[in-house]
Length: 396
Image 1 (tube, rainbow, N blue to C red):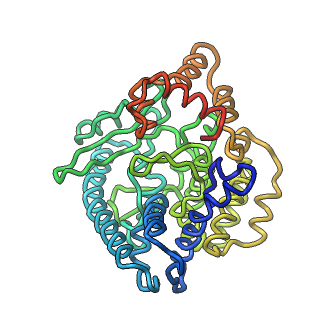
Image 2: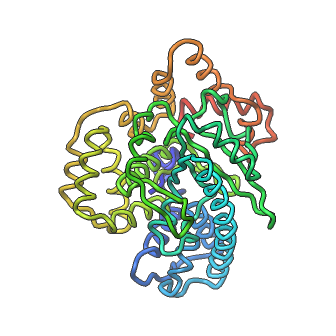
Image 3: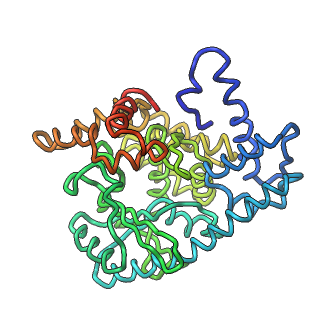
C-alpha cells in the first residue's frame, strides 16, 4: 500500500528496501480494526521509530490511542508517543473549533453560504470524537460571487493570506490558504475554495450549485456549520484520494505521495458503514452521471481491502461496469504528473490565460517553490525549478 515510484524498480533491492515499511503499514492497518493486535516479534529500535513515522504519515495517532486496549504488548515508548500526539490533537481541536465557529458565525451573519469539506466535515459527521480526525486545516467552499466578501470576513476575523502557498495569481486560483495565529500560539489554516477541487480538469465534479441544494448540519461544531450530503462527501473523498496518487501532502516538512493514506481510507470506511441502500443507489447514479465510477470503485475497494468495509458487491460491479471515459476519470486514474498537467492546460480558457497558467506551473514564484520543497529550501532556486520540472515528467 502507499507505493512510491521507487517501489516499482526492477530486481529485489527495491522490494527489500520497502519491506519494513510494508510490514509496519500492515500492522497499523490491523491496529485500526476491532480485533486485538500484538506487537511485532522482531521489532528493534529502528523499526519502532519507523512505526512512529508511519503513524504520523497516516495521521492515525489519536485513533490508535483510542484503540490502545487492543494493542497487545506494544512498547511503552509507542504508547507515550500516541498519548502525546492525541493530547496535542485534542488541544488543537478545541482551539480550532473556537476559531472556526467564530468565522462561520461571521460568514452566516453577512449572508455567505460556507460549506465545510473533507477532514473537518468528516470529523464532525463520521467520527465519535472529532479530535480523532487528524488534519492541518479546514476546507471551506463558497460561491465564486462570494469570494471577495469571504476574504474580507477572513481578514476581519484575524486571518491573513499565505501567498507562498500559491503558484497561480488570484484570478487563476481555484482556492487559497489563509492563516490565523491564536492566543495560545497555535496557527490555524483555512483553505478557501470556490471550486471543490484544485484542478481545472475536475471543474464539473461537485459544483457549488449541486451540493448546496442538499446540505446537512454539523451541530457539534456550530449552529452555522454545514457539510455536503454523505454521498457527495463519499465522492469527494474518493476524488481526493485519487488526486494524492500524484499530488503530495506534507508531514513534519516531509513531502509524501501516496493515495492510500490510512486516515483517508478510514474516512471512506466510516462513511460506507453509515450508508443505506438509498445512499448506495444514489452513489451509483451520480457516479454514472459524472463518469467517475472507476474512481469511486478504486477508493471503496481500497477501504474494503484494508478495513473489510461492507460495500455491496453489486455496487462495486456497477461502479466498475461504467466504461465511459471522461476528462475527470482520465485525470484521476492517470498517475503521470505530465498527463495531468496537460489535461489541466487543455481544460482552462485559451489564449493568454492558458500561457500564463503554463508558465506558472513550470516557474511559480520563488516563495512557493521553496515552500513546496521545505527540506531543500536552501537550494538555489534554479535547482528547485529543475526538480519541479522533473516531477512533472517523472513521479517523484
